[in-house]
Image (cartoon, rainbow, N blue to C red; front, side):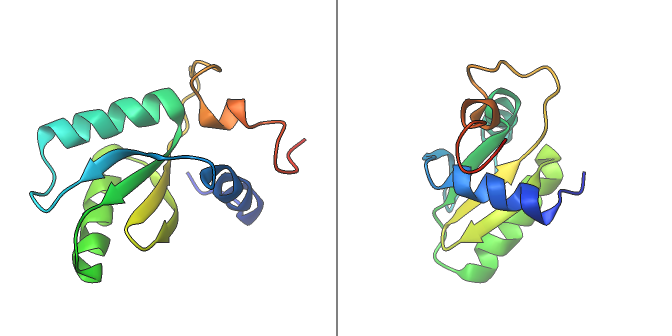
Length: 108
């Protein structure tokens, strides 16, 4: 699922207004974290994930694990926050961050 640069730019602009919905602590990735990440991506398509890890290399490794476990695509990574996207063709328009912000940020 390769996104164009224009799509990524639009998603990054939407991401400015989002708060993290999943937080990963130093305890690592558990089944509960993966389940919550999957639920959030299914409902919202575009989400922020906060990584409460002090080391940059650990955060990068954790992001790779989360991407593999969820099938999502990394849109942006700034500090301890990453922006994930996974398309859902049957998404509820009232929950989807993509649908909610469709008219904003120079889209359409």
